[in-house]
Image (cartoon, rainbow, N blue to C red):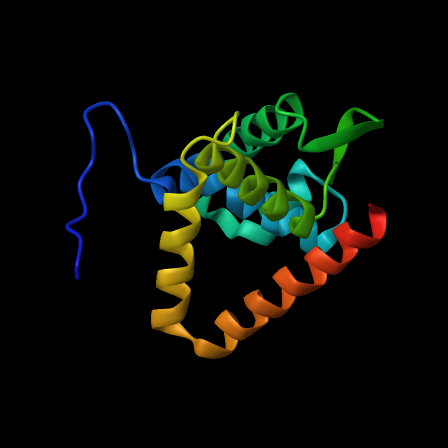
Length: 147
């Protein structure tokens, strides 16, 4: 049975919530810094080419620093920026936050969410469904050992 996709007034779909965690330019800047590990505004601009103004990149880097995603250190009259978190940690954090929100604070409504996840995974890839089953069995064994 296909369920129509709809939004309750005032709510957004999870994909719409996750995508804007960073703006498009912020995401591109983070990608640049994850590749380079550290860079000045000038170095980021060189990586972007002339398409993006120096001041725009300077503002974007400062915004990412204020959001806690970058660290910076003074070098001469300029700052050098570096990611505070790895790309993997950033993505994992977004997914964890989203899952926590979906499952709810007190565990109410967990069954429909999990049921839907299993349904969608089963439709797309049986191997993934088997892997999910294996992970559940391993978790149960682990919980039994811990008592």
